[in-house]
Image (cartoon, rainbow, N blue to C red):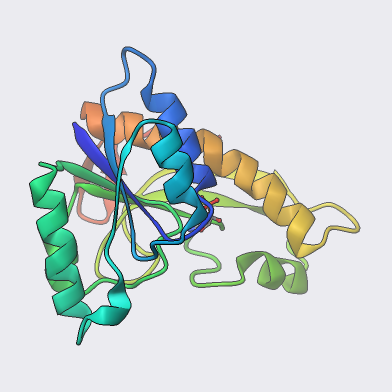
Length: 203
Ligand code: GRF
C-alpha cells in the first residue's frame, strides 16, 4: 500500500513508521511525508531518509475545505492508498475524512477514550491516574474517536513530570504505531461499526 505520513512537527512517530516499513515483508510502503508546515523538522528527516516530501501551508487557504482539496490533490498525485497521521495538528472536515474512511490511522498520546484532545500527560498527572498510555486508531469525523487498533499502557511513576511521562508514552507510540499500520495495511484487521475486529490485544 502506498502510504503517506502527515506531520506538523518533529516526526518521531514518522521515523518509527519509516524504519518499520523498510522490513521486506512490511505490507505498506512510505512514499510521501506531507506537512502543513514547510519548516516542520520531520520533513528534513524524511528527505534524508529518501522519502518524497511536500508541504501545503494551511495559512494561505481561505478555509479548511480549500486546504484539504489541495492536500487531496497532492495525495492523488502520489497515488496514495493509505494515510498515517503522526502529530498532524489540523482538524479535518467530514468531507476529507470520509474520503479516507478505513484508510487513515492516527496515534494519540493517551488511552482512549480517556484524555481526548491536547495536554494529555498534564491531565493524567493532575488526575493521579496510575496507568497511562497511547492508542492507534482509525480516524472518524469525531476528534480522537474511531475504532481502536492497538494500545499500550505505561505506569505513572512517583515524581513524573509531563516530560518524563510523555517520553515513556512516546517510546510505546513508536512500538504500536508500526504494529497498527502493519495490521491495517495487511488486512489483518477490519472495521465493523466502531470496533476493529482481528486486532491484537493491548500491549
Ligand atoms: C505524539 O505524541 C502523538 O501521539 C501526537 O503528536 C505527537 C507527535 O510526535 N499525536 P512526533 O512528531 O511523532 O514526534
